Image (tube, rainbow, N blue to C red; front, side, top):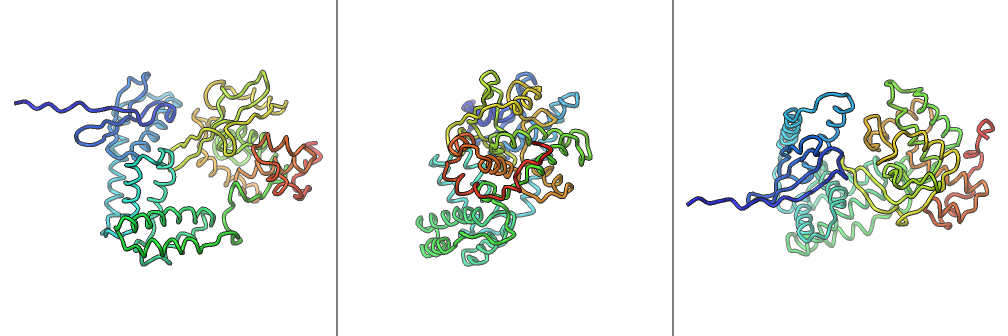
Length: 416
């Protein structure tokens, strides 16, 4: 008797809202969930196998999408076999890397405990896709890189996490808090003795991070280290004229983006997510209602801004001139030379090297927001109106932006 396999259930995992030329689909077959990259209709809706791992499939989709964009930009043909070979090569590289890092894992190993914790919550469906691809995947990578995996290594683990100067102490505590949550959950489930959950919770509560040590990395949103306005316009001129760029277009592609950050004081994540549909040149206003961040190579989208669901910003003559000089009138406003939305991780590298070559003290691009707010707050712009425009409270502006050194942010005579 011939046995027929039951049909596979196909569902969309990531659509063209995430990628430009493809989507990621999942097939629930009797042999487990398998993922495929399905090219757009213009490319013939061909598919490329992406394996059985969810996050790997999403990352492969990003890689193939960028390659297709590159080929279109250069006017080169798009060959399906070449794309498949590229995916196979990347999968082989990832498999080899996993094999190199194989080690004996015991049931009370931190990675094992973390995986137990994640599987339980994923099965419950209590975590969003964004939360999984950002926070959860990040902690898994953190633990994989950590040399301490035993519960007895508590002190060494804490020191290793908090001694990393690439993040603030506040961020390190947030990372450790999730690890403690996993340990505590496992102790309550009986996977490990209850004492470990109690010990790690006590350790977490004993960590005080109210004051940051000197030399620590700037917290983009909380710490204020403003530019002078003269520095801002020097940076803009350097980007526009490609003064320090080794390749044509490398710096100029970010000129209008940085100019916009300075004129509006919006958060970088809000500028990256901005679409033309939210700009009304007739009514002369911009609607900020979305944010996009890059986490582990994935663009994470968020509806609403940090503090409100949306806010409006007026378009003055200088901002109008900037916007009308941008050729696109559809989709994302700010794009790179390949026509794709700006990748802030790539931009950060350009920004850091540019400031270094200019001899300007390094600050993250978020400080353009602080500088704009500081300038207007200290130059008699009504505080309540400024708070509404930038999405902060009056109290925050009064506490953090007033009484700054006016000479640092005042416009130079040439610009006035």
